[in-house]
Amino acid sequence: MDLERRLELILRPPTEEVITLEDLRRLLETEEHPIAYDGFEPSGLAHLPFGILRPIKLQDLLGAGCRFKLLLADWHAMINNKMGGDLEKIKKVGEYLLEVWKAAGIDLSKVEVVWASDQVADPEYWRLVINVAKNVTLKRILRALPIMGRVAGELEEAAQIFYPAMQVADIFYMRVDICQLGLDQRRANILARELAPKLGFKKPVAVHHHMLMGLQGPVKPAGFEDDKRMDLEIASKMSKSIPETSIFVHDDLETIRKKLQKAYCPPKTVEGNPILDYAKHIIFRKFDKLYIDRPSKYGGPVEYHSYEELEREYLEGKLHPMDLKMGVAEALEQLIKPIREHFEKDKHARELYEFVKEQEVTR
Image (cartoon, rainbow, N blue to C red; front, top):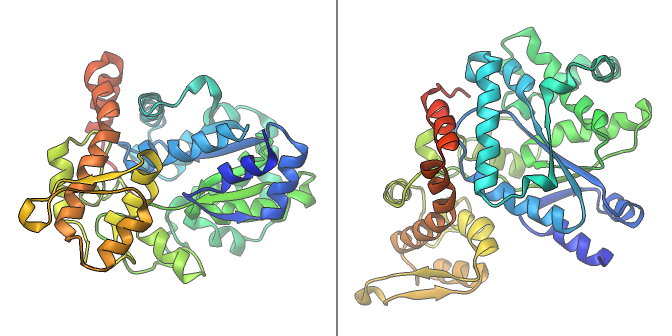
């Protein structure tokens, strides 16, 4: 495949930041099938970011010829006290997440699934963790805590200090070329880039994708990043631990409509508008148009064939927030329906869903 086409696929939205573009170009010039990875804590029911947005970006990387490794970070989730820190429950949630990706259309034969619990059985892995920790200050480790959804002042247990060193060691242990994770994981990726030459590894390229906004809209920045825009985006992201602000892959149309009706969506406003966020980063990546079935007294049905067209009309006040919400609800239902139905019809998938649904989800 042409180099420029491979670059285009990796850089297309929802990609939001690349560190660095020059490094990525050099990598693609020398590696036909570079290793890309993302990692997830198995921590609850799948929402739009995992079930819809992530597969969109994964397909881009597979299309660009990357070999993709999915790290199910069960030990990391245990350290972060997800599922009460119960490793067996966490592993079952990991199995559920794999079912979500299968239902979302991901061919798992093209993805290498790696469990953190397998990596930690290798003494070489822990040698890497210790080497990372020996080459970074405690202050720097504490600065990296936002990768686990926390800031230094929220540190509760000594075990949590291991988390950033483990995430950096994951990158080296798996021989990763491209860290293709959400923007909230950038501090671990930057730390890996800084330490790589010192520890005898090549610098990984960091490709960070957009964080879908929660239904609540913008929230107060929490110190996750020094850059104010990034800090706001990370603080405002959709979080499964706040279910009333999230859309899950099991939600039916009526549930989606009710959630969107209450969502933050000020008229003639694009900045911080979660409904437009979903249209831009999900709907127009999956569909060539957005259909909105308006009553005739409000202009009748309308179709938008690009996000730019939709944004322009919304800014001009030609589209009412409630009409936008209902049109987006219908489109999201089309995307979610195959996943939801898989968990309704497949016995094993349904059992996993019922198990996860019963668990307490914590931040």
